[in-house]
Length: 424
Image 1: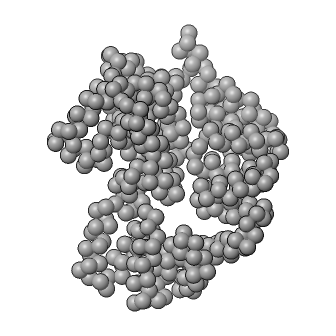
Image 2: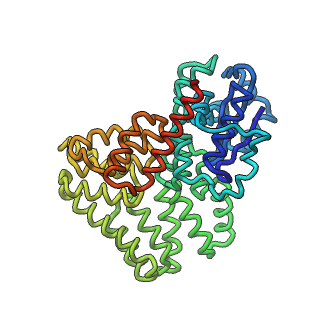
Image 3: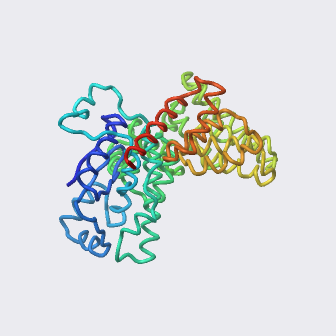
């Protein structure tokens, strides 16, 4: 039995009810997340065995291969990398929910509830993914080298799902590298192979089409091919030197190529010709100036922390982390660096690292309310309510209106009740 569960058209509660109801009938199940915001559950009355050799053989069938290529699943590795939950994780997530029945057909009314799963809610599914080892233990006839490759693609899908959920280009670029140029990822970067090919044909047939050139330059920028992007944008600028978007993306590409002074020239031209971009471009110029100062004083802790904070604002968290870790090499308990790191890992959706560096941050600022909230939040989202409750209670004692602390605490308490009923 297979059931489709779209995350984009119902609430988190309804999704978990699907899990609860499905598992009440099919005790053996695997949930797959092959694209963003879509779950497929496969259920059975008996254990679902995965034989890697047999699976590879299925992909040799031309009809199967063609069908899977069309949905961006080129091989058995890609196929298995989409596994998201096994029975235990689905059961844990849904332990406090009711089953959907003829006498309680709650799911039939979800469209009227107006509670579509948000980015914040989707995180709960992303963070609770079954560990790779649990999944690999279910796969027979797989070699050590094949297992290593599968783990790399499995991790790439983690990056892809978080990149789409947060609309974060940095995460998508990491995923693109990990997944060896996957067109699924390129699609979300607005630069699929088909899009780029179509734009190249348009430019070839009509070299004066500035819009096609701009879109092509933007596409190359999106997938991290900055030299190509800059080359295309220069063609536009020879024809129209004041083109604001061509100047803007020329500046972006040059920053990535670490040609900072050149980048400033293009940013200043862009801002002169499009005042609507004033604040965002001013931010880029300030960052370029800061990076130039840092190049003259590479171990300056104040500058390293400032650059890290800038990149966090730009949601380029990996870059931010790089500068913050340079600070920790000099001062292992530098408060600002640890704060930037916790913020960066939270932005990337990495709860384990949030907790690890949050613990270190608590050594220098144990009473910080935001830190206590983050501990509670990450523990709730990774299904560790028993540990989360004390942190959430501390936050509410200080400020009973702080963010969504009360709702997180209620969720934890209801989950504990549900698990108690299940256990009984």
